[in-house]
Length: 300
Image (tube, rainbow, N blue to C red; front, side, top):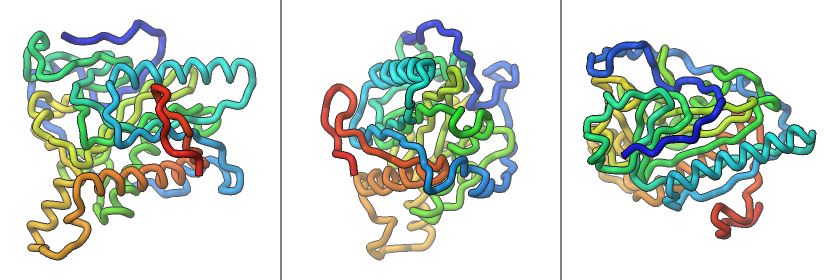
């Protein structure tokens, strides 16, 4: 069964290529690396005048997808009301993990599912974001930025590149992994492995949905789909890449490559928040209460 999004008039921008080909035709994608954009390309306000971004830290929680989805839409509606009233409207960032499930973009084809939707291995949701099918599950950090692009740049392509920049910086600064963009595609790649998928929705220049970064994710569920509709390409994870480096170099010392899953999640989460703050030039304020009325950490 596929759970369907409510009908809306929101516009969307695809997060994965759609070229009109039949899904059962094997699409060959050339991975032409493009140079990373400069840090100055993503600075929208001065360091001394950063806008506030409220952070809901649920990075160690497995949050049901439907709850997170409805929560985002509620926040979008609240922000629209604040904007209409010309009241202060801080940006919002939610970071969490999901139980195993698949999501489809608004125009996704079920031809990219390698299973019968009536007998799916996990729940399947058709959402209002752009792009084709992807998988969410434990060990994958999901970031949902709900921001007013009027306060940054009213340019959806800039926004997508900025989200990619966050992940590229995380991989470089924290794990010494050289990642890149791929010409014509959205997401972050290391070689021919895609580590981060991005799918967004924008309503009146307010963003929601966002990015998913594979940290310690079990990659087997990706075998049941054609991720983002791209045939014959791999999906990777930070843990998997670090293990590859260790095997290639014969590393047996106690170093970064031997951190356990919990440590890798924590390191990645902290780096994501730091780089998101820098790329979008936002002051992060951790909310005292998270979703469902449960306490997170107090503001720093």
